[in-house]
Structure formats: structure tokens, C-alpha cells
Length: 511
Ligand code: NAD
Image 1: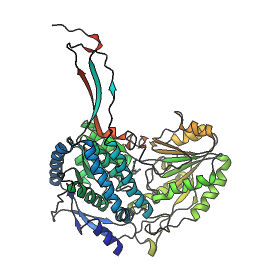
Image 2: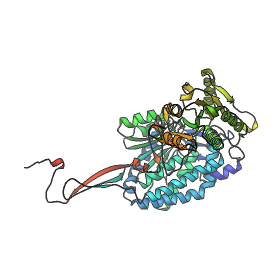
Image 3: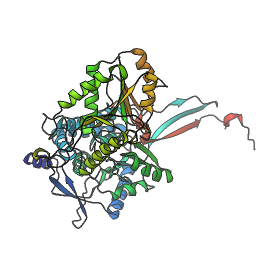
Image 4: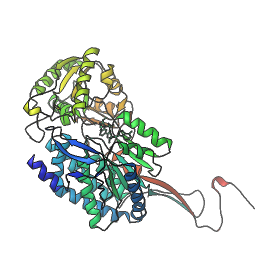
């Protein structure tokens, strides 16, 4: 606890934390409603944070609109240089911010540091991008004409993020959006508001040190802010990360006002374990994928589709591996599995197990909620494993907890059909040393997911690739490759340097 106090202090977090920030300005209306941030690690209240009102929202939007007028005119490499400084500030804050992520969200300390590293990596990526943002040039069909395309900033980007990656997802969006010339308004999860306050402090200081106007990076706390962003025509792009259920509401609202959205929604990720797999590697990939972050990653492994010849052997090795898992305080690096985010998540876990049993799931590793002095928050659960059939309702859903389902297959075609046979399409993998199987899995008749791996599990990704998934995962792409295009508007330009005005398609129009 003492350690956490100094972490909060180092990150500039005050006792009563404000509802919103435009950078230099942090709101301070003391009569505002507050929400509490509790740590799932030990159940302690960390702090109370004020909730933004509709007036707060208006004042942020006005500041952001005026900041955009300034920011979009700065040369992109200058914007990139500030993102570079942001990356350096994150390097300096890595230990404190990673520790706060671990304490407020409940993921392991290593994963907390990993999240901050991902922020640093995306800043590096975005800095390079700030000297690129390439458009194409094309050959015009008309003589003495030049045709090309260019990419312009969109305006205010709304970022709505989930609790499970409380800092990295925001930075993926913000680093790219900023080099692209946009300004951002962030509504973080109300389950991890302190992580957001800390991030906003770090970026605001960099911008202020560069004498930038306020309103380039903005933060608004509170659930009601989500709908304000969804329905606000001044926000041309909403990047939403969260459940498919809420994503449907967001995308419908944004589409109805012809806004654009980037949707990063739920997954139901499977690994196919072929009889030609390296089983040692497969066990590590499967167990880490299923229990890492206590099964609370969008890319967590939820299903193992195992070839029947090795099914029994693999199941037995899995049961043995689960027997070695150490569950407890995620800040203690000796533990493999930390808590779920809150007791509501624990209820969902317990209900999913009950429902699975009703549908016929055979639990080969039993679940259960842990109690006792080491588990006083009530958020610790046992990772469990059940033999199921893919069509069970509970298997078709994403339960955000460490429940792993085992499914048997005979042929690769059948395995691919099972892997694709869920509504979600985020991450997928095959474990095989057989080249034909690997290529079939990656072919157009293979995995239907946004991410398809060979001899790597489903969980986690590098920032260099475009991240996102198909079907009910929403179709959005963030992070690497050309995902930056999602944060800009494309303009096609044709310039006539002839003395005449020839029309396209040879159309004649004489006066
Ligand atoms: P959630 O959908 O409950 O909440 C996500 C965010 O939406 C929160 O900030 C929440 O306050 C906000 N919100 C709630 N109602 C809203 C509304 N009407 N309008 C706008 N915003 C609203 O999700 P969660 O429990 O925080 O996170 C877990 C989910 O996120 C899982 O389904 C997981 O798979 C998904 N996720 C996906 C990715 C990805 O990249 N595909 C990454 C991380 C998490």
C-alpha cells in the first residue's frame, strides 16, 4: 500500500481526481458526483474520481475544436517529434505506470510493464510514420493533368477504451491520431480511471513543455460520456474498444450520424492442435493464452480444437500444467494468475460454469472462487478446463474469464470449420509442423479471423501489424501496417496544367 502511494504521487495523481482534463486545465468542481476506483488485487479503494457533466463535456469539446485548428497546421514531423518526446516520458514513467496498471486492473506486474512497453513501441512507430503518411500518384487519362491523393486529418477523434488494456489501447489510438493531425477526446473505462489520469498527466506535460495550446489530448471520466461521444457530430471518428454488446450500440449511433467508427470488440479465439504439433510448445501457448491476464484479453485462448489421436495425451498434460499454476497477488511475480477485474466479473465466470454444466460440459479442471486472506478482494478464481461441443451456447459466447474449452476433431477441414464456427473473428492459431496444414489454415479457405498465427498462441500481438478482427469483432484495425489510414480522410486531387478543359471519359461540352 505504501508503495502504491508513492507510485500515485510520482504519477501526479491527487487525492480527489478531476472529472476532465484538456491538458493544462483540470476541472475541480468539488460538488460533482464521484466514482471510486477499487483494486481487484486487495479490494482497497485507491481513490475517488469526479464524473464529468454535460457542461464539462461541452467545455472540453470547445477547447478541442480550437486546438484542432492549430494542431492540423503543424507539419506532421513536428507532431511526430512531440510523440517521440511522449515515448521518452513513458520510458521514464514505465515502472510507476506499469505498477499502477497492475494494481488498478489486476494483471501481472510483468504484463503491466509490457503494456507500457507497447505504448513506447507505438510512439516509436508513429514517429516514423509522421514522415510518411503516403498518398499515391496516378496517371491521368487527360493530357497535361496530374492526379494524386493526399491524406488529411479528420478532426476530433473520440477514443472509448476497455478496462483490460487501460493504457495501451489509448496510446495506440492517440499516437497515430496525433501524428495524423487529429486531436483526441478519451473516455476510459470507469473501472480503471486512475490509469487514464496518469496517462493524461504524462502526455499533457510533454505538450505543455512544447508550449502547445490545451485541448490536443483530452480526458473525460464517467459512463455518461460514452453516449455524448456516440451522438456528437463534431466527432467524425469514434474508436471504440470493448464488448460486442456495447460496440453494437456505439456503431449504430455513430453510423446514424454518418460518422466513422473503428470497432475492436470481443473475441472467441481458438488454437488448433494438430497431431503434427510440437506438444511442448503447444502446452505453453495454450496455458499462457488461456490464463494470462486471468483470461481477460480480447485475444485470450478460449477454445482448443485438438486432433483426436493426441486428444487424451494433450488433455492429461494440460491438467498437469494447470495443477502447477499459482494464483494470487499479481504484483508478486511468483504468481501466474491474478484476479478478475471485479466481483461482477466473478459472477459472470460462475454463471458461465453453471451454464456449461447444464449444457453438458465435462470439467476436467474444476473452477471455483477463491477465498481466504490472500484473496480478500473476492476477485480471484481458479482457471478451469472443460470438454465441450462447439455448438453449446456458452462456447459460442465470450466469457471474459479463464475458462478453456476442449473440442475434438478428426480432419483439418473439420477443425477449420469449428474454429470459424463462432460469431467472433479476432485471433486464431494452429500448432503444426506440417507445412501443408499451416498453409491451408492461412489460405482464403482457412481461418476467417483478423489474426492467424502458426506455432504461436492467440494471445497478444506486436504493434507492427494491423490489429483487429472480423464478424462480431467489428472489422476495425488499429496499431501498425497502414492502420493510420483509419484516422485520416483521403482526398483525390486532379490538377489541369493545359490550356483547355478536357472532360473525363471523352465527354464533349461546347458552348
Ligand atoms: P465494455 O463494453 O463493458 O466497456 C467498454 C467501454 O465502453 C467502457 O469505457 C465503457 O464505459 C464504455 N461504454 C459503456 N456503455 C457505453 C455506451 N452506451 N456508449 C459508449 N461507450 C460505452 O467492455 P469492458 O468490459 O471494459 O472490456 C472487455 C471487452 O472488451 C471484451 O469483450 C474484450 O474482448 C473487448 N476488448 C476488445 C479488444 C480488441 O482489440 N478487439 C481489446 C480489449 C478489449
